[in-house]
Length: 259
Image (cartoon, rainbow, N blue to C red; front, side, top):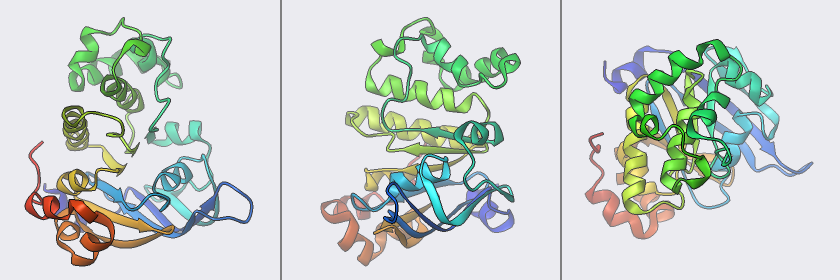
């Protein structure tokens, strides 16, 4: 079933409604964000710096206090849950930085990803190695010796060890070379096609709109625009206000990119 068909027939796996959240008392970064992801969707979140993109993911994952609004996962209210409970409940999160244990091996990093279900470690490890075969070949290597792109793979793989319903990715291409960025985007799409709903905050708006099913533009802590990746890539207001010098490239390459 196509993602478009799925989106019209299935209830959202995750819904964020009217989220207000912030780091300091009395100061909100999010001012009423509404975002949802349906089963099998890859959702992109783009927008200017300071718009609240990463704050949204951290609020969903229990790292920023939600002062108003709600988050539901498969119909269950998970607002304010702690990260360990969220992971157990089916939410995976890959932060932008400090996302591996550098002194541990690749295999030990993956073991940390499923410490709440240790008996399932071996069976899940084999599934993950099918998606990330290079990690299987280098499982004994210390994560601290890996390149940025390789660390990103380890972080994604660790988040998948608990077989999440939805995976939150915070700027997965940040700091990577163009080639490594492409590898990361293709890997993200492959994970998504394996059945995991993905919500991805991304600085590379052009590439994000190419691969996502739907996208949201955040501005000043609110969802300013939403639509399919192709719709937003062609929207004159979105191009003028948020895509800037990327506009020509986005229009030229807006068609879905094969994964």
